[in-house]
Amino acid sequence: MPWWGTLLGGTLGYMFGGPLGALLGAALGRNFDRGIKITDQQGTFGAGQQERVQAAFFTTTFSVMGYIAKADGKVTRDEIAAAESIMGQMQLSAQQRKAAIKLFNEGKKDGFPLHDVLTQFRHECMRRRNLVQMFLEIQIATAMADGHLHASEKNALYQIGTQLGFAHADIEHLFNMSGPGRTTGTHKQSLTKAYDILGISKTASDAEVKKAYRRLMSQHHPDKLIAKGLPDEMIKFATEKTQEIKAAYEQIKESRGKG
Image (tube, rainbow, N blue to C red):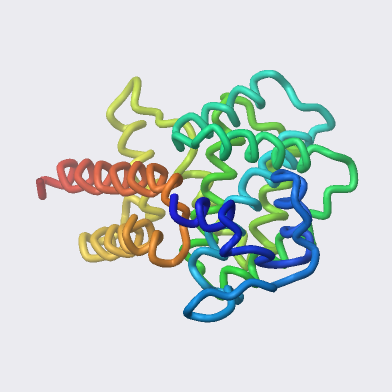
């Protein structure tokens, strides 16, 4: 967690102002509203630098989780448990977990500036589309983790995805990737899920299947995402996604006699 130590150590300092700086400051009990002040040997931690992107990703992830949980007007115990489960999977340190919970609670508050938060987050990511997509996938996975997706939560996720630059069909594909596994019951059901994960139809050619597989593996490659600013603590999500994509691809190949 180099970015976290850099943040707490003061080297990263007043990384950014705006809504993300205010949220992170509230979570850490510090004042980050003065904008970028601290430099290291390489210069100011400006927009797009990896450690700053990691801090922005962490801040946006947990505050927006809280917003989505409150989207239907109340936060249930199941939704809190789902968020805590995600935090547990990330193996956050005690300090990080405390900050994540505070960010989650900030997101639940009335008047949470969702539009401003997402606008700054998208700017901080500097057109790293695959990184922004991983953020959206984490939000969808968390919302669906308790097995109940309220219509207002789904609408909120579509709103978030749209503001981040994703088309309706792209967001729908992310829902299909994170939806129920349907691995029980008939083989046909499980095979349907495999096609859903790759985002293709059963009539796709072998070449189209391979192309979809390679594209998704590239989008979710853990090392590539880390290099673009995904916090190390969230690498498990990327790894699990690549495993799901590979399993779906192998199942489709087997069903076509290509295994």
